[in-house]
Image 1 (spheres, rainbow, N blue to C red):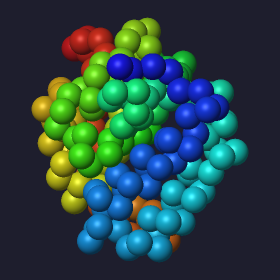
Image 2: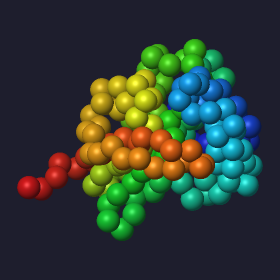
Image 3: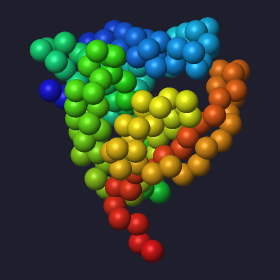
Length: 163
């Protein structure tokens, strides 16, 4: 089951983010950098703001939250961003990611394109997006919480581009 997130889901989202980040970025992003990012980006005040200003969706298995996705709303240019799509490791490759993505896309029908940024060494994430119709736009270096990373930018066309 997929449903919109509420204030009561904040602790579950925080837990899913922490568990999935440790699993995904071990050996890629130092633990101190991960903690710094997670503490800031998933603090309760930040989560309250996300719930008000963005689309937060949760995936459930037997009434237990197992994943979430966070999308921006479509802007004036028709663009939106998939900010996060995280699943507990034991629930990956069970269709929950695809369900979260599909549910999120249903909220973006008036948009033109959806962007997602993925750490270049996050092979699981990159393969997921590529299997689900995202196209690689570019790779670039950025400084993430003071740590240099390679980032891959992907695009998903919500509407067929006019050529």
